[in-house]
Length: 72
Picture 1 (cartoon, rainbow, N blue to C red):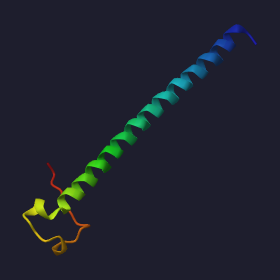
Picture 2 (cartoon, one colour; picture 1 turned 180 degrees about the horizontal axis):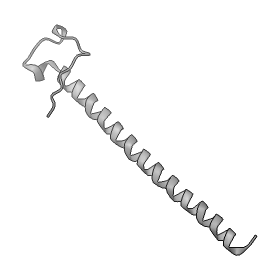
Picture 3 (cartoon, rainbow, N blue to C red; picture 1 turned 135 degrees about the horizontal axis):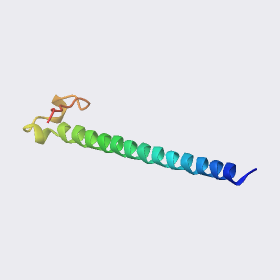
Picture 4 (cartoon, one colour; picture 1 turned 60 degrees about the vertical axis):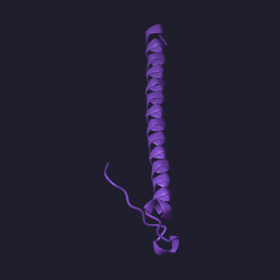
């Protein structure tokens, strides 16, 4: 093999590794954003189910699985 073909192969491997690294970073960011949104939704669900936050309603008067979300 000539030096130029080895350099081309090495550069190809380096480029592929860079692309793989960028894809992994994007996937990690998306996973973190999704995790954050699930945490926020879970906190919102729990807090909106608290009777004292809704004006002192009795806890048995509402379905604990239902919650309200606004588009704020």
